[in-house]
Image (cartoon, rainbow, N blue to C red; front, side, top):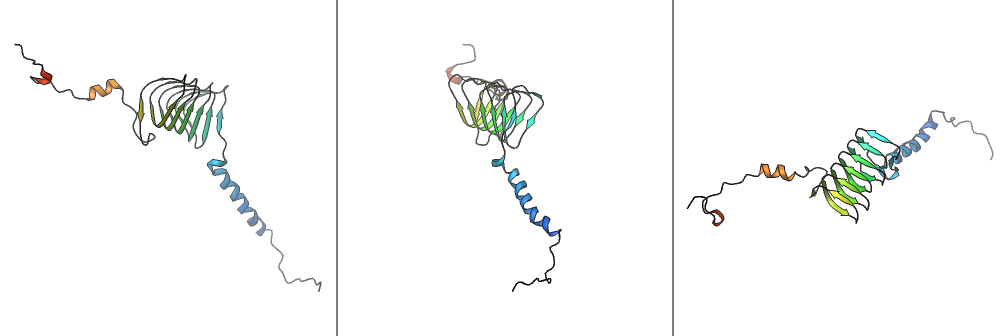
Length: 173
């Protein structure tokens, strides 16, 4: 009934890491999911000269002199960006001097934006300051930005006034 059976081969130590590996792979897999990541933060005492690129969320409370690209960008009340901001969602409480390209743009109370905005959805709350052009686009992350009014006027051809155009004769009477 209670006999010792020596016919079983002892488990080799090499087989034990195989049991551990799936767990490690699951941890690595969870770490690569966007939902599992916390936002990267640029604190108010930080200043970055150069572009910032993130595949996840980004909270900017400091100063960035360069372009910023991420999935979701929030510029805090003390945040300042000089350059292009490109993301799926951009929420602005601070200052941006440059263009914004995003599917959803929210300028919250206290925001100061001086530049063009290309968007699918735009929300501007009371006491937000915006100076620039706005262009709606189905896919703002792929389309070209708005053209300045002066540049657009130069590219448009103005036909020469033909006699009798608009009821005005150009020939002396």
